[in-house]
Length: 275
Image (cartoon, rainbow, N blue to C red):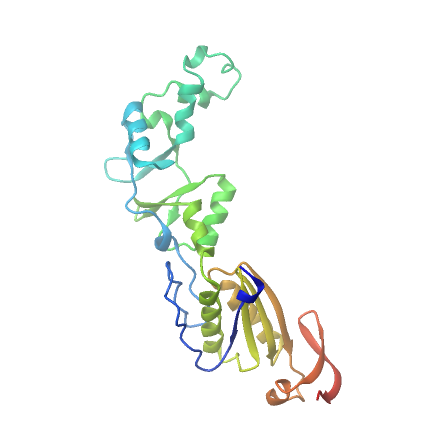
């Protein structure tokens, strides 16, 4: 995107409705506290999940992976409850060590490697009691769980049963949004707080958000930054908002009164209006 393509919006009491076609996925609604509702697992997951029975043979597991073109499958019991997870990586052990326990180089490896090299069913291959996600969990929570467990996907469980799978690819959808949609949603959320005014501006370029203009207090400054950072698609926040001194009116702040901006707050540099 060129610098000229930066999206700049002015917060007003009734921000204009974008005339651009709406992208997919559409962002969450604005909550009662004016913080935009983040995308949840249910919004991005793959459903229904392709699952394996615990007694599925090795050959059947391979066939399901190749025909489904996915990298991991939950393993369920007869009631549909999650008991494990099999990934393509689990299937590699048989190819890497085709002679099982007598394969060269396997003797000093973990016992689980040997078990997988000799696997005959999904239950032999699977990781038991895998980390999982809930339908209504936010994507940041799920992303942390993926990082902490070093996994690329999580089964999605509702009332004990597998209803889908969420992957790294799915989580990244949060950032795949046009700048104009991000800016419009930030403005709607700010307007709903009654903190925004005609002197508050939002600009977005490649997901990097710049907040500028004037607010009444340091608390308002922090609140608007929190709201902007909660909008899906926001990559970073450059908070250039200035706290308007109490003796300066909102009208004066939009007419050129000069301030010295220091670390997101403002001191009066001169009580004068520029020409």
